[in-house]
Amino acid sequence: MIIVGTLESSDCLITIIPAETLIIEVDSIVYDAFGQQICHVIKHTLAKANITKAHIICQDKGALDYTIKARLETAIARYQEEGF
Amino acid sequence: MNRSYLFIPGDVPRMLQMLDVFDADAVIIDFEDAVALNQKDEARFLTRNFIQTHPPKAIEVYIRINHIIDDPKETMKDLEMIIDLPISGIVAPKINRLSLAKLDRYFEEKTSPLKIIGLVETPDVFFDLMTLAQHPRIQGLMLGAEDLTRIMNIERNLTGDNILWARSSIVYAMHSVSKEAIDTPYTVIHDHQGLAKDATIAANLGFTGKAVIHPNHVEGVHLAFTPTEHQILTAKKIVEYAKKNQSIRFNLDGKMVDKPIIDKAHALLEKYAKNGDKS
Image: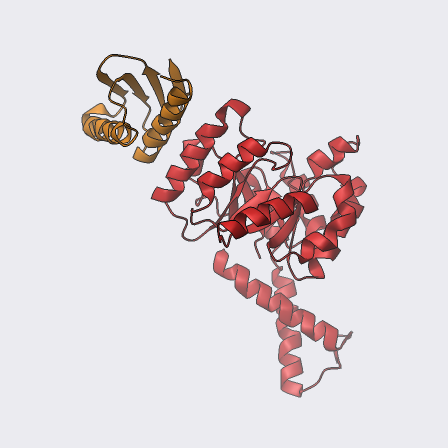
């Protein structure tokens, strides 16, 4: 399991757990307004890294797109370094 | 030349997003001391994504990388992540001939125009300041008094008398090549009186600017590095009198004025005009 980021304001906490399929969970304080956009950023970032199987949890505290992307990229880099 | 260089940690989104609202002339996004070892990658990814989506407009942005000699692995990762970003340059910790040569070689290979502000924070480098100052990649040198006094095992006191030689050495070296001499930050966050005193000492010694570790210090530093109203009025009076009377030597309000004083008045007004644009 890889955890990156924080639960501070304007940030998000990304968790990646090995899985047999792609599962994306988003818990956001602004889910109604931005939930779809957050999912889009996560899917786009995963696709770019060729990740098709993993359980992604995003706990969002009002992070902008660049923060979600950066936190996920960091998590992916660590995930791949660990040989998942 | 920038009056203030505000340090901002590279791994905190809410700070990055506010980097242009603190009114600093320049900011330094930190990958080194302000970032824990296990969060260096977070800072790199966050800063890269931030600058790609929010390219700096009205502010100069620098990134303090890790130390290329002590920690080459982390530093190479830093450099790879920032080399193509629209920033002004990097701040290189514990600068010396060897680290400067390595960084310069890397930038040359990548045909990068990025400039280097060298952090002067080890005793040996004071005997090599002119070599560093003259290097074309060097934009300025910044005193890092915390590490310097730690290495020398001396207390940092609020009067700064035990770092006077270090401060003056940097000032003289950098003035001899017309580059930036940047003073060490004042580290007592809520002591605005102490900050004003420390920044005024730095400005009077000849520093062109000062590092800042808290946004609340920006205004105090700018005050110290901006000419006072009285200084501006006096300079204007000198310049106007010299122009009107076509004279380079005269008595003005009981004070003898000659060419160096007239030149100094011109320089002060130029500096004020430049900083006026920033404030």
